[in-house]
Length: 161
Image 1 (spheres, rainbow, N blue to C red):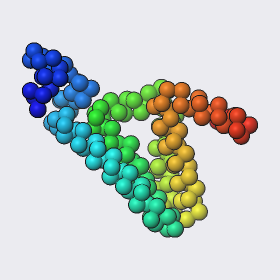
Image 2: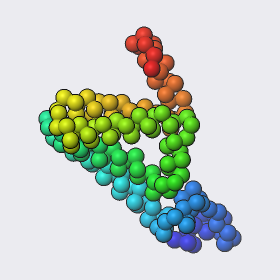
Image 3: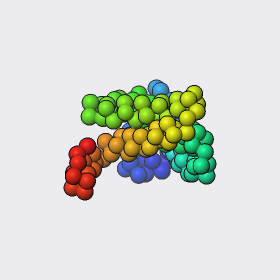
Image 4: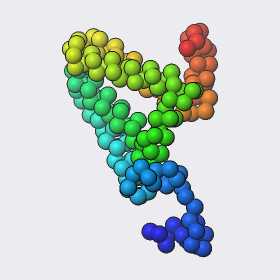
């Protein structure tokens, strides 16, 4: 594997650090390949939980638990790539702090409605809010993504977010 990296980097023995190896050496003992596998496994598991939640869609409490767990796994999977510290600093960056706070708040509200209140109507409302917050949070990583959606909402619904 090392010879392959040297060959791709230029073959003179000096390998540049990639985005997977720069800051996370002291934080994690996983190699770059292991972190890629962990990212993929965590992301696939998150999507699997979100897909499996559709099976129990008629039971909102079970749906909320599976969907929320899958959602958190999918979002947290990038911590294997960039490290948990870098991910937290990106999540609470000044341009997406409100989207992150709203998303985390909706996740907590959804879990509270499902686990402690046991109210199906409130759980469904919390699920809808969580999905919307997840979309808005995800759009914060796409350049001009939130602005584009806001412009579309103004154009189609004659309203602004």
